[in-house]
Image 1: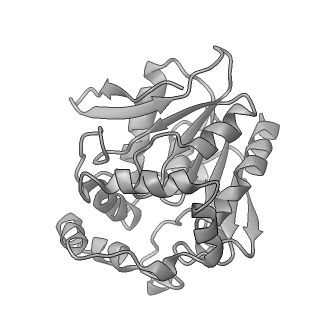
Image 2 (image 1 turned 45 degrees about the vertical axis):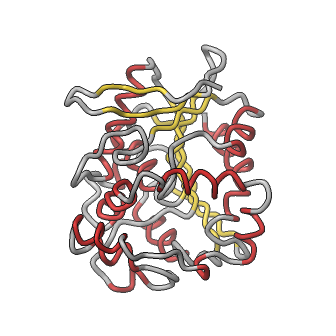
Image 3 (image 1 turned 60 degrees about the vertical axis):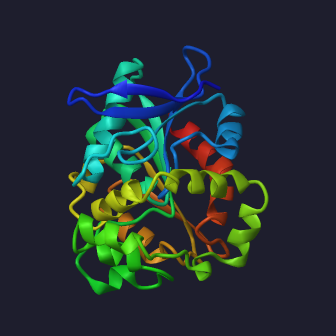
Length: 275
């Protein structure tokens, strides 16, 4: 696996990315990390992808370690950084997937490069904010996203006193984090280690216009959702299903926000079948 690399954008920003490499003709999976994470290709993703012959490329969004901040960025803005990396690496067609906050970014990439994205998978992904208070219903701790409605400075101020709400995760989530997906928790800590800018800018982007239309996603989409999710409730997956023209929904009734990731292997098999 290659280490972290950097790309300098046309507007002078640094973008940090990770590339597992592999055969020159290996199909590419573009992975979009959650909020907060570093963008590194953590072990369970690398293992599942490698067993299916996939090369994984993952990009740290602006404000996360190694990637310059980009205040007021939209979801689409972050996706354009991913496209810049793919273009620099000479990648044409690709598969793309994202977990939690990575879900909107996977969809944005597929919308911006509709002729290159063969398939999309989201795990517990947010739906676009519809200005309804119901959008927050079922979230154990919606404070960060609610503060983001008032803008970047309000979200950064919220971060000064915010603490993790343990009830956000189910017993199955904690079991998953103590087992095969332990690297996810470690990476989340590293993603937040340099401060709250990346996470705050993510949250502002989620509750602002994404900069893309979901109907522009022409590739098949698989929405994988835990029925017991207390971070991104299943109502978000249902809303996405209504707005994506070529989507299907897999509900895993017992899974929460983290344990739903144990479906990664079967979801990758679904993706490969779309090629």
